[in-house]
Figure 1: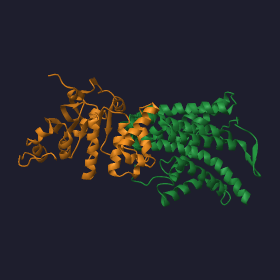
Figure 2: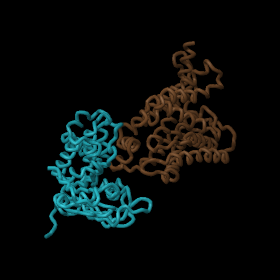
Figure 3: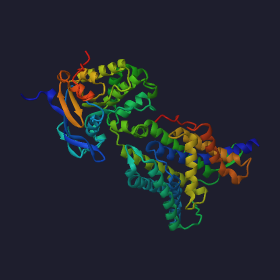
Figure 4: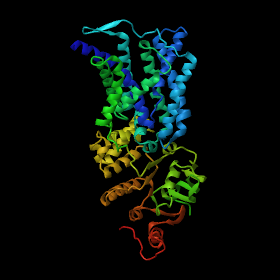
Length: 294
Length: 253
């Protein structure tokens, strides 16, 4: 039993790291632009389908398809930010309702575009970062899943260090907290918004490239990931980078462990239930600030 | 007589008409900030004081007229570009970053400065001026009291080594003692050669420290001159209480 639990914890950490990465991107975008990006999961879809397209073209290297996927999603993010989000931004904040409607629209348009191009079939990409498995103690762990974990944690950690230690990272946090004072310090709020949205989208694209080798891609796959991102943001706390990281891992572990006690079809309930519990018991989330403070 | 350095205009609002959504708050208003000393703007609510500042800083684009800084037009520049030109701004609402440490606040203030040595030098200068900030440099700014937060705001904007400092209601929400403390710092900075443009509800205080006063009414210039000249007229009472010449408001001694 103990080793079984341990095994599911390890599996959970690996899926969880992906949730962390997604939640982190969504949280940074929300924290800086005050935009709930309903199309966040679709950025992952686009990243995954770039991999599919490259595989169909005969490219087998997961590294190249990851680089191309992240780059493509970053460009897509920049275009969305520049063309759709900028015009509805006043005084350093995106108009809440219009932002929701526009990204909701995107979450309909993008999957349908993909459906039009690639068709409704489940797609599988053959390229793997690593194959085979390693033994952790007495437990065999798929190397590809380990790669997802390591990749996600490196990206998430890199982002945290970037936000904490660099001049640009400080500027991003400054705009998130107080756009007026940031502008009074000479920071271009407009440019920071473009950068932040691009960065958040690119992280989701990276998640897409990482997860692709162990799952199937289909046009509507983004919606589920958007819901996971929202759960992670709410459980970890709005605007908290550390919160998203820990909440994602927690959610992955909880979901994975749940199969020990409930039928595996029900594990999709874990995220919404944890989210509801958080909203009831600790509405500001694990690491969120108390409401009333900006 | 040729103008002395003190009288040379640093910033000029030149026949500016500006407002929100078609209704003009400023009506062909002209105003000059000198390169030395403290220029103050007073006036009742709705006179257009904050609108003047927003126009000068670029948060609001005038429908006509020009805004100049140091002789050249800045009316088309974005707010952050005006900061780059040497204007600093402390708004009336919280103008610092409560969720960051005090040192991080200063580093954000130095965003435009690339040279690390210069940043370190200016940080030290701010800490020398405000020792309380140095003691708490690694604490989050949210722990600061109202007066200390004002010091942090002043410190934050000193990081860009501004030539003109624009303050919107620096006395708001502070006890009289802290108001004095803030204005002591303002006076000290003025003596170090920084020019100020200050908007205040606290008319007594501003008349006491200001070198040159503008009184606005309905988006127009009702008076400009020295605080003493203003105090000698009944204009203040008229501006704030309607047309009753009964009580004169005298500046604080």
